[in-house]
Image (spheres, rainbow, N blue to C red):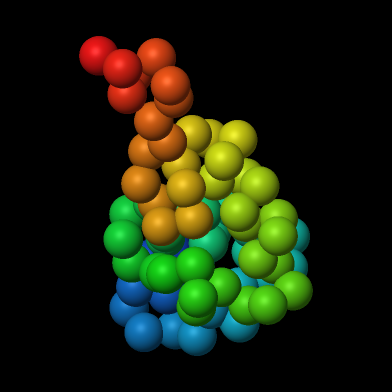
Length: 73
């Protein structure tokens, strides 16, 4: 369902209209795809969104995290 909300936001719908239960997943999807910045995430969700991005291997800009082993190569 996050994909539906993501498409609505891409089409111009306000991010604040996304249901609370889908907000984190939708924001993460939009940040990774480059359609939303971390600064645009509603303030009450920033901590959860940042944690979920990190869990999925991304920084708050939607860029893949580089671990020490990969950086050394």
